[in-house]
Length: 436
Image (cartoon, one colour):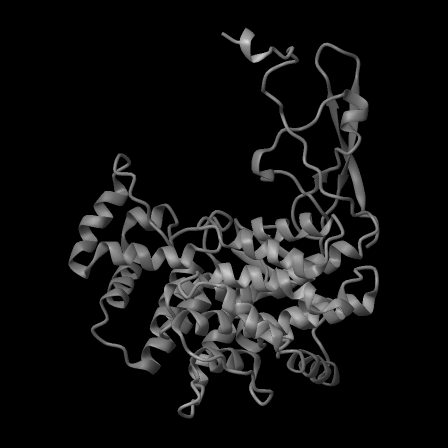
């Protein structure tokens, strides 16, 4: 990765001294410039304080761009709306990994490389038997993915471009298989082997739903919905789980360990569990007639009632993924002909209120991607404890792409955040008898 372009600078002066530091302004191709403060400590003897790194660029990246104020999400420069409508997940995987949409022959080869890696080592089947039947699928996914390095020794050299490529194929291809195995294990059904004649999304739905006793045909509307969910969740810049993958990767850890670290971070309810929280909220409301009372509590600052699935930390106007998910949601509900389903009835009523009530509209609390994806997955019969697992399946390609970019960046260093220490100053040890 080339050295970023600089233009201008910011001068920082330390009060009460004649010391100052010049921070070059690094120019982004899109978005605000960033002050390069790497020489700040050497010049002034101080660090910066930024809890949560909300105002700190920890890396340079060419993969994903977000403009939260304008509601823009770009994968390698392509608007998410165009990719979700006209592309598919495997093509998006190629784009994120390699920077360009594939030509016809390139796409065919890439699809072949993904498809031929969907099976897992047969001994991994026995690995599942060490988990309790009631283990959360995310716990299983995290453990099994972390253990992949014990089965695939030939793709652990992160300095070998070919081994990095093979590891990428394996992770993108095998995680849906492992995720489906985790689900089947949790409900006591036999594992279903992947099929090479199905698309990525079709194959995932097949492994989740098929049983040996009867034929299972994948509904094309549901497969398209799943494909869109995967595309819309494939990457989202330097979020908590992606930053975790990069931090773990900066140590030189193998790719399977790094992705397992990302899965662990995604598991947190403040991150990957948002669509599951939407269904939990609807369940707590109970029935459509209780919605007005719930909304009044949301509006009451003293009630501490949380509204899930509306608004977004990054997107200040609207979530560009939500519009696509809304259309997909209504397609799925129409295809399945679901009626008299309380949770879905409540969801649709909540959507209506959010789009018409001034409290929501004025605060830009529009339904976000988690709101609609949760409804879709519920309608498709996928249990809520699998929602975050599906998120991990989609996000794997983003994690791998970010990991690969970091490894190939000559400027990358091991991650080592600083701190503001506010504990005790130096003090002498006292024997226990002298401590009173």
